[in-house]
Image 1 (cartoon, rainbow, N blue to C red):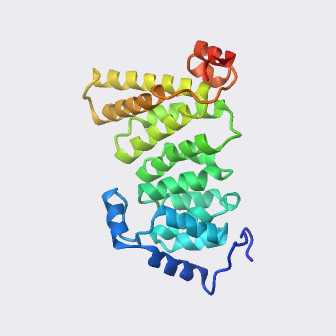
Image 2 (image 1 turned 90 degrees about the vertical axis):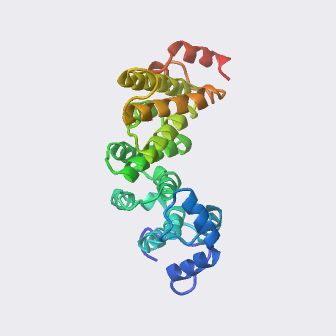
Length: 274
């Protein structure tokens, strides 16, 4: 067994990659491919296998870093998704993350790589900040999707780490590209749903963003594409965050409270925010 490889829960006969590709072809369908295309997913190298089926296959295979690298190298869309599900996060290197990010070509692959694998690696925070500054559409989307994944999955990170992402989110909101602005909103909403203090901080950021967009546009309608994109992100986040009950509490005086509304955080810390 090669270094870094995790034992499979079920042995695969012969060439494991070939066996898995055969299985994926059997699971795929033209109907699913057509549905993927309608949702804006590239299907030129897709087999038409649902993510539900892919996760079922991944559970049978188990974690295997070496196999994940081989699956990704096939270039087959579902094989690459499967690679994200079976890879071992601790074995993933920054070089691998960069290589995979540079080959992203569809929103679903981007999001699964970011939120099913990359956000669980030791390199997630640095890559999220780095990729959010990149010009490439899919790499930049991956940066913001990674932030959303961290907000959901990194239970150890403190509020100050997420508050530190807000300037990148507010800057990224002025990117008018559809798949980027959607991921920026996802990151902002995800951060705001993490806990009560970050809920306040995210709403404050969205309000700042809305004001900045309207200032650039000279009003609350119209404007250049970047201003319209930022206004959309702000309103999308505010619609969801203002319409939901604040999540679990964090202590008063946290960096998130400082970045948002300290009085509201103090009230919540006294037990009034649940």
